[in-house]
Image (cartoon, rainbow, N blue to C red; front, side):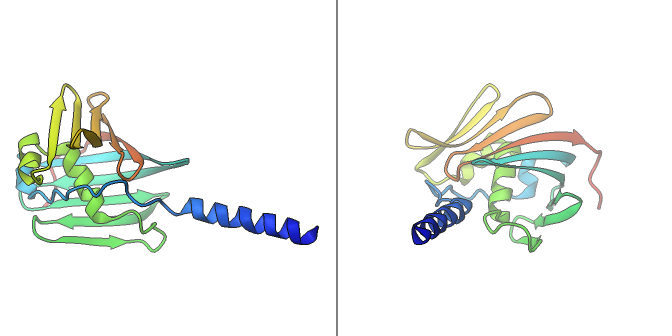
Length: 183
């Protein structure tokens, strides 16, 4: 009987561990890697990020600055910096905290950011021929065939919800203007 209980507990433990690992993406989204100047204006905003992945939820703070030469993003959780990103249109530089899950990749963060903020024409120009961007009203959708893999919906003037169906997460972004970016 003890062996049966031990086996059951082991199975439950393994199941819990397996559920902690993120599943493989359902599709490989095309990288955007748009140059900073393609945004068309300078930007400096503080953001509250509400991240959902399955049953997990996280609240993060971010500071985003964009000028013609560089995108700078710092993301913090509980007062600790998790990621610092710099993108100059050629190279992505990132510093990551050791506690940050490996599934949070700077490349994906940059692509999500650009999908939400950059002009539709710049995004379309970066897409492979078998992908397309649709935009209607306050919604933007990235499709491969007839399947929507990424969407961004403007909830109001300050909030956007990003749904990544390929990697099974959502992100609600609330932004507040903090003025012109620094040098």
